Length: 332
Ligand SMILES: Cc1cc2nc3c(=O)[nH]c(=O)nc-3n(C[C@H](O)[C@H](O)[C@H](O)COP(=O)(O)OP(=O)(O)OC[C@H]3O[C@@H](n4cnc5c(N)ncnc54)[C@H](O)[C@@H]3O)c2cc1C
Image (cartoon, rainbow, N blue to C red; front, side):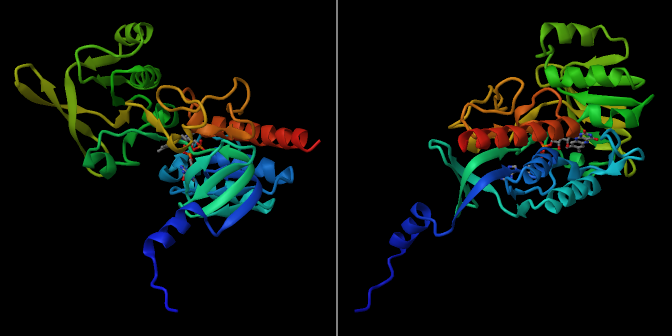
């Protein structure tokens, strides 16, 4: 007898019982320097890693031009080329690199469940989280217009290109004051654009910043836009003079640095593993281990201090070694 199609019943089947289930020894989530380094080590240790690349294959470095501080490239290298090199090295040893996004996890059992694109289910003995962190921007159109032309969210990465020049840093917290202090050691002058009339940074950092000769703090200023012919040549700011009294000012700068923090991509894991108040994954000090056995974290998603490609790669190596040791103990 003809049975009409019950759409709700089918919908339920789709979410409760995925048809596509796969068991893997080692699942790597994320394809930045941390994920690829973990993949190289895991593949060479015979863990047959499967990697899901996420929405940004190659990670943050694919959005930059020159990388001059990654060891092994004496002439420098562009971010996209460097990430292609890492990918080739990982696939050479058998890493299965796939397009897809981890959308949900269940780390409550011994076998860890990770859903890809809300459909495919991966059952993994070990999971390496390498999902990175995203720099926060003000949301101005000009930040996009001058991306790679004077706008940066990383003073350690790009400060060198502005030696002897004038730059600005936005923000009043620890990130901004650290960026400003770093740039003050390289640049002629650093403007610190602060929305309030005080710094949110720790007392020590605030005092250090205020006592640094070539840092000028622009209190109660907000950025309205940037200008320049192809590259940043200046910024238009709005000074709040109280009681809705505003004044527009311009500063001449070559570099505009965001210092308003990062957002670690850790939301989907937060139910099962510990994170700090910002969302950075907490690992057992000196290791990549999270509080869940068999789940490891590496790279920017667990690093609120350094956030560099080389430190991400180093911690990716740690995660693969920790995963290999976990599996050999488990199967001993
Ligand atoms: C513009 C710019 C320039 C930089 N320049 C330098 C430099 O010159 N030198 C330097 O050392 N560092 C530089 N950095 C910093 C460096 O890029 C990072 O420290 C590094 O990329 C961190 O690596 P990662 O592997 O932890 O994460 P990322 O590179 O952030 O990679 C994260 C990966 O996780 C994936 N992902 C996220 N969520 C999911 C999910 N749910 N499922 C699947 N995949 C997911 C993303 O698609 C991405 O592939 C720069 C950063 C930026 C933004």
